[in-house]
Amino acid sequence: MNSQPNNRAEPRHIAIIMDGNGRWASRRHLPRAAGHKAGVQALRGIVEHALTHRIEVLTVYAFSSENWRRPEEEVRFLMDLFITSLKEQVQELHQHGVAVSFIGDHQAFSKKLQQAITEAESLTGNNQALNLVVAANYGGRWDITNACRKLAARVAAGKLEIQELDEVQVGRTLSLGHFPEPDLFIRTGGERRISNYLLWQMAYTELYFTEVLWPDFNHQDLDIAINWYRERQRRFGQTSEQLTVSTVPD
Image 1 (cartoon, rainbow, N blue to C red):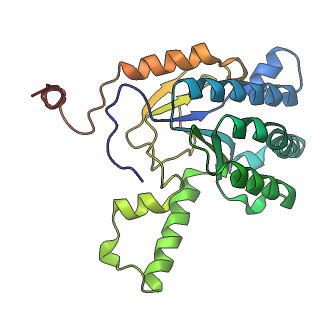
Image 2 (image 1 turned 90 degrees about the vertical axis):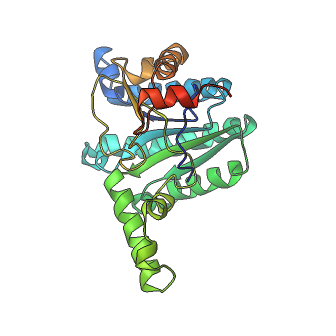
């Protein structure tokens, strides 16, 4: 994990909660499935625009561990949509140099979906233009708990001393442990919460909320969010005066 603060004007890592698909469909008197399909197309456009900004990592919340509580028919449709979208778009992502990876507990997924995930990661794993990370059946609390289990197992096996446990060890063991932490978080759809998403990783992330529903979120909206980020002063516990002094050339 790159734990060094990013004081650059451009975000290296953007994390998104893609919220509002259902409401988008409802306002158009369409089934919720239509909103989810439109959401996939919106993501495709955002990935393309992220490439033009030379974003290193784009992490998107596709399906939370709490989303299993939704109606069975909708969950089943989302699972099928995952498989279809992967098969239809992974080749194009690969051609554009996008490395696709997934975080979350995938044991609950069907064998067919698990295979599609494995194949996508295998095909695109060496690409370097953009890391697209899809959080599916993911929860921040699950992530931290899972990391604790792994670290406890290493201690029990004698591979790690308790006194060696620190924030760096925990961070490296979490999902996204080999990526820089998110600089900019975007949530569409008007809600003002992070909903159990990357709880540890977003300790110092700039949080941006917009009323725009996800299927309507386009490259102009992403530019607005990035411009907002550029105006933020990321202090990481320091004072504004310290940052001003540290940026003055010798």
